[in-house]
Amino acid sequence: MFSLARNTIARRAITRSFSALPARQNSVADLYIKELKAFKPTTITEKDAEGSVRPWASPVAPQIPALEVDAATQLNDYDAAPVEVVEQSKSQDGEEISEEWFVLEEPEDDHHH
Image (cartoon, rainbow, N blue to C red; front, side, top):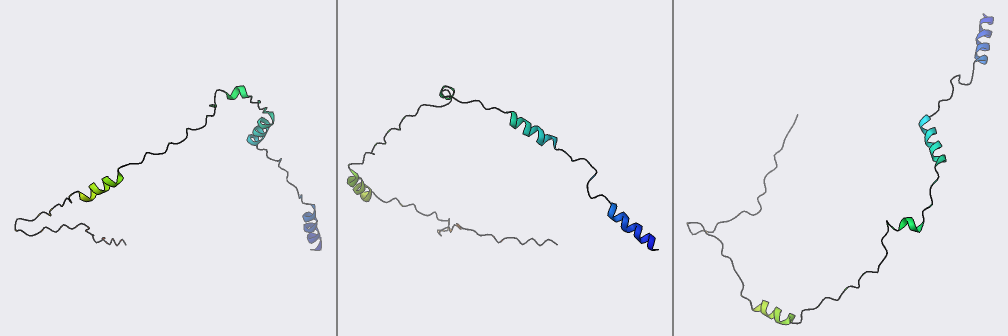
């Protein structure tokens, strides 16, 4: 009985504490890093930029808007203009038709079970 206990303890001590599988490699990441290291950027000169950049020109200065000289006379003409009044339509009985401008409908309560 004691020999059986010694064998189980000895087996526990002998077990591996490392992985037997080889480390997995991410081939996509490796390929990406390889291409990044191999990339050599070309230097950009002013001659290369000439076709894609417009020369800078300062914007045109804004002009001051011309004010209406006869603003006072136009205001007087507006005040003197007759007021246009639209009569409300009447029904055949002579009563005024009341139009409901803001009709609020009751929301329907949908009770789903």
